Image 1 (cartoon, protein in one colour):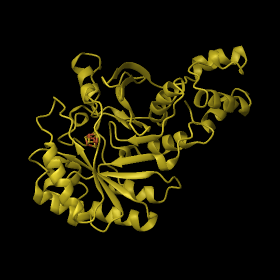
Image 2 (cartoon, protein in one colour):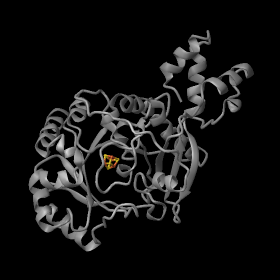
Image 3 (tube, protein in one colour):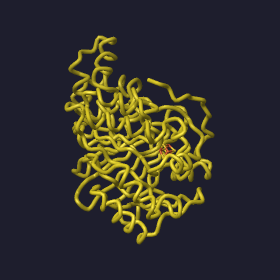
Length: 357
Ligand code: SF4
């Protein structure tokens, strides 16, 4: 769905008063209406006009799979040009309903452990395509008398490579007259695009920042995350320090546990030393084997040992609960599976440079 202001402008060019746009946004976001025909406050003629000219959702569900325990629902969407993206809804035992969304179709950054990184890059998503992943699940939950509690941008793509559209989408998601999901319940996760972190400092939107660290030294980081060739660990730590000094907000470090790669005791000490004293939290993420990449996840005992060492440095650290392992819940896995099964048209490669913004 368009942002309220964009919808108002669009309708005003047709001499339709702005209150109609507000009625539409309210019906779609607050009442879970999925078609104009059911928005009975609108005149019939306008319902028909909007149905053809302003689609409620800019993406179409291709496939939806649920984990056996029902905790995780993953949806594969098709965009207007045939590209596919994924979004996941996770129901946690504490009552949270978290949606993980994508910011790009594919990803250019090629992290060695990531299924999305093995796909060809399609393009940046529009703000509507990003916020509509949330709207889709918000409408589904509305019909079950539930509400989304958290949003994480940890799906396909690097959010800061699509900065402007991501920020606009977040404003749409946060809009009190629309989906009304609090900024403090939204987390943007970056693999370490320093300019994005610096830019976020000056936004008036108080979203949470997560940094996918995955390695506490430059050499190891370069091995598993090619983005470290562009932004060194030192530059990343400087950007994080600026962010923390200016916003006084806690950041989360994401750390995926890869057997024999980044899970040794020595590396745990390095991580503890690197971030001790920071206002932060570390999430150790058990690795979902992708079936596409030849990397295994660390064994639970090693993850616990790693956690205990990091804790010795006074760093808050937890092991993330993993959901949906039976449905390829890690980002890019469903899209990859669909590609193999011929559901995905070949995604066009696109050369995009990492810009200094
Ligand atoms: S982990 Fe994130 S940044 Fe890295 S390749 Fe996958 S989607 Fe891209």
